[in-house]
Image 1 (cartoon, rainbow, N blue to C red):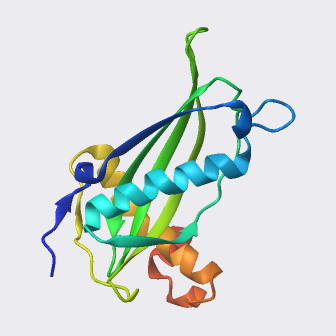
Image 2 (tube, rainbow, N blue to C red):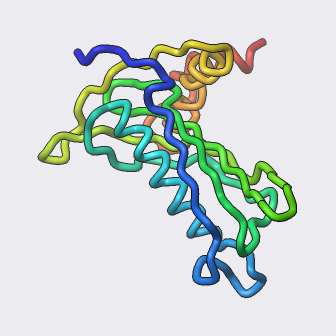
Length: 171
């Protein structure tokens, strides 16, 4: 079994500038381009945690709350929140910054799931996560509920088997 690792060891911060080729006809960042950048940042965090090649298994709901404009600086911060057998949940936050105007806004947040694989592409065991601060503990604690919901939605778990979700709904 791999040695557990602290959540902060996977912290990845990635920054991009929105250029004309990244935008739609309204001069806003295309959603697909943002998802691509988010996937890269989250994958790097998962690789840092597992020291393995990783593949994207799922992406939770991503809503676009604020447009990201041409010329904005986009900063993505990703960190592994919890690890299971071969999978890892990664939380990612996105901010857009208009540097000349001095404005920085939160635009997106999402949970990605990655699976670590060996050289043959088969899932391989990953280290457990050690949360250190209150925020990391809260995300770690709620990760099992999010995982059970993902498994139910994917048809890989029956709702009655989701003990963490049932406990939450019964309270």
